[in-house]
Length: 368
Ligand code: NAD
Ligand code: IPM
Ligand code: MN
Image 1 (cartoon, rainbow, N blue to C red):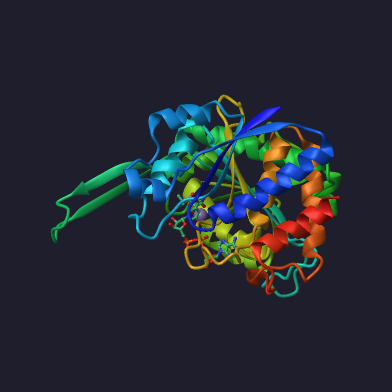
Image 2 (image 1 turned 135 degrees about the vertical axis):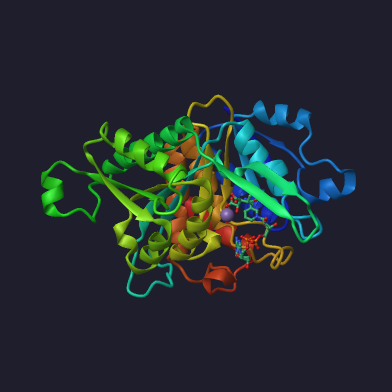
């Protein structure tokens, strides 16, 4: 028995979360586990009606949940940042969700815009540091609104924060080794005992303070993982190679800001924003972890019933894995894979004409 806090949020958030919860209900019955839901009406509508973003009492209620499912926040009538920082970042920080785990995996039957590449080429996971960097909100203005205005926004990188993200990435690589060695390794590397690869993505040639710290930590921590190959890419070249040679990547570990950017690119490799899932993890479990699609509230398609619910559904699978319901998580992923193999059940982002509800229904049929 576990308790899920649900924040449907704004725009397409409630539309895709509804499908995620429907699938959760079905898989719970099939696999025989129990859970309770507690809903929280946070987001743009509540802010516009009451001025409240995330009241202290609500944070404490959320803290009492085992996990959180979030749709998306962001509202066209609310200034940028109020909801994103006030809800999403606040929860990531307050609940020490210092890892943002974002798998990039091309399912068979899904078209990637990268010509000539298939599911065997696109199977990586991005470990995005989730509590530091430019996201901390360190900085400010002076002489705001004048011609001499100065705006400063500082990237904060702590050795402890960097170390824990790096260690998590190496552990991910070890966990992936159980599925077999990384395909990008040469025979000589495999003979040397290497199994998987971690790529640090940073900008050591320019950010010679912050990313020097990342590189030194990477080198030191890698000594504890002699079975894992270490790789480094500057972030600009990484973007190029993700497109040209996605098969080069296994586990990527990177900063909060770069991780945000490259995971939208990753989403495209795997068929679009409608398919990209994520988990904001508190690995020590001292507070709830939070699962959400990588996409936002998509105001351009909100209310039309055509949003792809699969990113939210795959986020439910990540949540199930986190609470120890691995068989249920597997079952949801298999059902999604089967749906993606039949072109009739696709939303417009994947070139189909199906509605959000129809895709949700198709996944539930495939669960059985
Ligand atoms: P977005 O991800 O909402 O949308 C980008 C594009 O992808 C849009 O064209 C949209 O229609 C499409 N898209 C996204 N999800 C889709 C889905 N499930 N099915 C089909 N198409 C989908 O990004 P944006 O437009 O830059 O941001 C909109 C709002 O969402 C902003 O307020 C932003 O701050 C917020 N946002 C929130 C989160 C979050 O809550 N986790 C994440 C990203 C953006
Ligand atoms: C994401 C989003 C958020 C981020 C925004 C909405 C704060 O883009 O989850 O990728 O930048 O982390
Ligand atoms: Mn993003």
